[in-house]
Structure formats: structure tokens, C-alpha cells
Length: 104
Image (cartoon, rainbow, N blue to C red):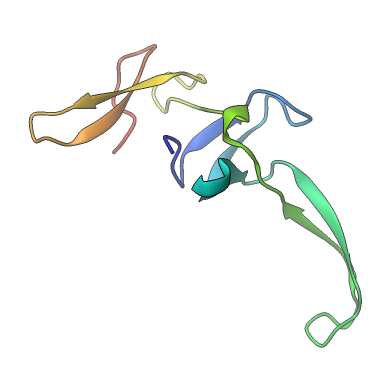
């Protein structure tokens, strides 16, 4: 998975196209990500011990990772990215548009 937890991404297709959010969870075996405020679904809950009133709960549902594209923190645009090996043998992601390091 090349998108990591905590990355800022923009949705490039679907009902939330154009919206941005932070990656909350990455599910690598299913190629899916959960993004904050994106793909909100409503679940109807019966009253229970935990929730005496019951009601409608809103949660983020996962979307396919191919529908999310990384946003570069420097140029603030959705971008493709490459991987560069530094002198210290660390791999870092770089923005293809501004050639800036994305990883801290």
C-alpha cells in the first residue's frame, strides 16, 4: 500500500469526488481505505444498554484505494508520487509535480 494512515488524500471518483480528507485506516488485504468525512453511511440502531435512545448512526465506509489520490503538502494539489532512496538508505515518497519529499 502506497497510501498510509494520516495522509491527506482527495477522492477522484464516486459520489464524494473532489472532497479531501485524512486517511483514518488502511485495509491492505482488501485494497481499501477509510477517509475522514468521506463515504458516510447511515446505520439504524435499536435501543440497547450502550445507546438507550437508539437512532441513526453515521459512519465512514471504506472506499477502494484507486479512488483516492495523495495530496502534496507543499504544492497543495493531488499528485502522483515516486519513491527515492536517500543517502541514509531511507525510502521516501516524492511529489512528481514539485519534486518535494512528502514523508516527514
